Amino acid sequence: MSIKFLHSADIHIKLGYDDRYRMDLIKFMQFFLDVVYKDKPDYVFLAGDLFDKKVPTPAEYSMLYIFINKILSFGSKIIMTQGNHDEPDNEEADHTLQPLMELNLQGLYIFDEPGLYNAGEIDVLALPYVYHNKEEGAATIKRLHDTYTGNNLYMIAHCWVDGYLNMPTPPTEFVITPEYIKQLTKVKYAALGHIHTYGTVNGSHAAYSGSPFRTTWGDTDDVKVILRGRDDGHVVESLIVPVSPLKVVDFAAFTDADLVSGHMVKLRAHNLSISDMPRLEEVKNKFLALNNVVNVDKQLKPITYIKAEGAAKGVTIDEFLDDYVKKNDIVASKAKIIGVLEKIMTGQITTGASPFTIEELDLGDKK
Image (cartoon, rainbow, N blue to C red; front, side, top):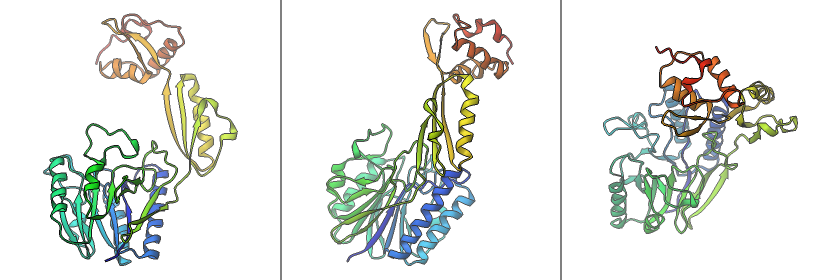
């Protein structure tokens, strides 16, 4: 039997965030629904991290409900599993998709435990992100695959494939190997989620759709996609999702020629002096006035002081404040502290064995 499918993952619904995120989230949903309406896929795979927070708000639940209900109304079935952002921090709590499971919507299949399930015309191996017994879940999937006797098997998983696109694997990840994936030869297509960059796992019928838009300011991928496929011949193509263009601007080299409109603007301002702050605010406002969403990546100049035990330590101003003001519960005006630290940075004051020796700070009073 031949089926048509769409595959996406890592939507990370999080309302109450910045305007850029809400705009791209809505653009993605409109684009995706248009594709579903025109292509009429048999199945839509949503491979985890539908929400960003462990406890979504009612508005966030409503947005996902409207989205999936519209897909179902077009006649497509939906297969979902939870990712690490959907999974609770303890085994007693419900995952974020539990309320949707309880709606019992016709055509919506949510698989929240490793296993082999039937979803109408196809069978599905599900490997959700789990914090507990990760290796046991992967072993269960392999065993169920090896004993499977049908001919219409698919997979949905939220995990990290070791070595994918030469990305370093974080030490605490839920990891499976490319060899593990390749051994699942009965699987016609494996819809993967978790890694936000799209691509196929070499030598297999498994693919990451990646996130369909930039879910964080650290994501600089210029191209975002959803994947469309048909199981005969395992033909999978990427459909480019319209996302806001990103421009990275170096504050130190900024000129008015850098000004654009309608962009995500990441304003990188490193090695800043306190005296640079008014100019930084001025540049930020120039971009905002042209209908951009602006993120300021700000790092102040480091300072060096000698801790009481005699070891020199290079720190930022914020780290200095955290070390000697917040932790020591010291009563001192932040404005006064910033002013003195500016003098430290410019060499007007030299620190001794401890910041407490700086008379101008008058740090002797405790709460």
